[in-house]
Amino acid sequence: MNEIINLQSIISNFKFQGKAVKAEPYGNGHINDTFCLENELEDGTHKRYILQRMNKDIFLKPVELMENVMGVTSWIRKKIIAAGGDPERETLNVIPSIDGNSYYLDEKGEYWRSYIFIEDATCFDLVENPEDFYNSALSFGNFQRLLADYPAATLHETIVNFHNTVDRMEKFKKAVEADKVGLAGSAKKEIEFVMERANDTRVICDALRDKQIPLRVTHNDTKLNNIMIDNQTGKGLCVIDLDTVMPGSALYDYGDSIRFGASTAAEDEKDLSKVSCDMELFKVYTKGYIEGCGGSLTEHEIMLLPMGAKLMTLECGMRFLTDYLEGDVYFKIHREGHNLDRARTQFKLVADMEQKWDQMMSIVKEYV
Ligand code: ADP
Ligand code: GN1
Ligand code: MG
Image (cartoon, rainbow, N blue to C red; front, side):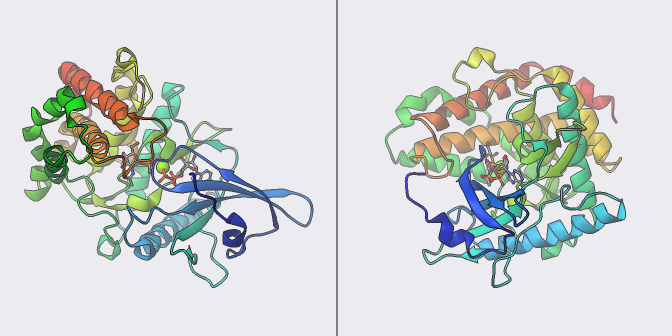
């Protein structure tokens, strides 16, 4: 963030406890501008909050988005309370603005929101041990189960066609054709890699269209750093980043977790020899996700899990590459060529999954 933001004026518009003593940029999200705010209370203790400026270029209807967040968190909250859990830590808690809204609209037209900071829990960018990954799978599966009876028709579609891989392919082709910033020549191999897999992009879309698999309420952005793992228990504590909760497929949630978490390297690793899809991690996540969903996944969904992993990885690679070709307008970048590096790791993973296809299929078959 190069601009200077007057956080103090933003902070004064929320119903926070105590007095702000510190506020700094926080986390590794690619979309919103996230800050950690630390307040001192009257008794001298400190309390932290997450303060976020929502990306309004990406989320075109922030008010509707916050309606989704309020709806989903209050739904989950009731279930947590009924199960004897801690609703302050196991779901996001929105701090209202002083005029009682779930967001604050500043004079520049920017939308802000705030959550209670979940303490004693960690968001990981890389899996540190298979147990954590298994626990994250249980939580993401469980999250989908908690929302299974949510009135889906009341949810706003925060990003239209978010995981429609056919539509993503079309957008990708247009970006290649337009070659807006003249970089297509530097990504010939990568563009070809995507084009060769154009037919694959239909598989989940067709299965949904033909009702071979059900439409569910899903998270749609299930990367490992969108879940908080409890520092004491090592268990998945709270699913965060609810901006894309919408009707979708369980294959999206499962697939996106594999894409990010079963990779042996960071999403933007430059040394591709370090990047592969770890079959041990694939196995533990598959087990955890199917368990977390509480037996609700159909046989057809289970058989399509490897395709979910491959297509979510291909889609994400396509999205990074599209953004590279369009001049880095979507994902935050931290170095030149960052989106191309990210696209390359995704394509390396796709190629690796294709090599390991039989292994992946035999792992999921154990659960049919
Ligand atoms: P983005 O959409 O940009 O990824 P997130 O909502 O995922 O934004 O937030 C970015 C990061 O901020 C998360 O990966 C996490 O580290 C941290 N974070 C978000 N919400 C909380 C919270 N309630 N408590 C603690 N950390 C949080
Ligand atoms: C973004 O918001 P964040 O950083 O958790 C993106 C995901 C991508 C991911 C790739 C709303 O996730 O779809 O898979 O980056 N979120 C949105 O790391 O586009
Ligand atoms: Mg996030």
